[in-house]
Length: 287
Image (cartoon, rainbow, N blue to C red; front, side, top):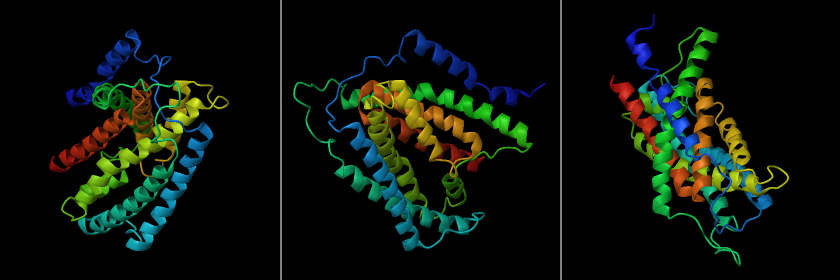
């Protein structure tokens, strides 16, 4: 028989089941009627700039590594964590900066509505509120998926999974007294969500949805497609057992964006999730 603490770890399962039932009962997952908004870029242009932005991110990472020097081979102490956080901050800043330049040059972001097309999106404030609501809904589902995948991985490998499954969080854990702790935290909590949501939701998901040949206008098809690539791009930096939960989380981002037509909803969810991960990491350290 499992201990009470082990049973308590499964609390997200009934909560996730109840949330899914309520979402389905109220047809909140039905995306057949989406808000119209004034972005005018064509699907091919969006997909091309998505690829350009990925290349720019890789170039920025290379420039960051050239400026900072190579990272430590292993991060096992506060000293190596400080060096790792320094490299991470510089590389991440350079990557996000070049991707931001590409996104700024993307045509169709800042234009007004096309002739005869009105902007029927909810307000930015309402979109942020929906992002908070969606985050509260999706978090127990993500916890449940992570719990199940962790148990499966542990059962197959015979090894206990790590409490902190992301490389950057592991460095922040060891380097919490480093002068690079807060620059890295700021980039992870604010910079990454903004750029990644513009890339994966604003460009990739929206371009896939509009592309008649690829998705035929299917909102959920575009959400799933963007989430698959979003998850694949985190292979290597996220532990194996964390990838299924990341995929579900990405689908939550995509659903919020589709419901509102504003990136503010998905960015809000992403900021809250990354911030929560930092807080949970600090609590693990203290305990």
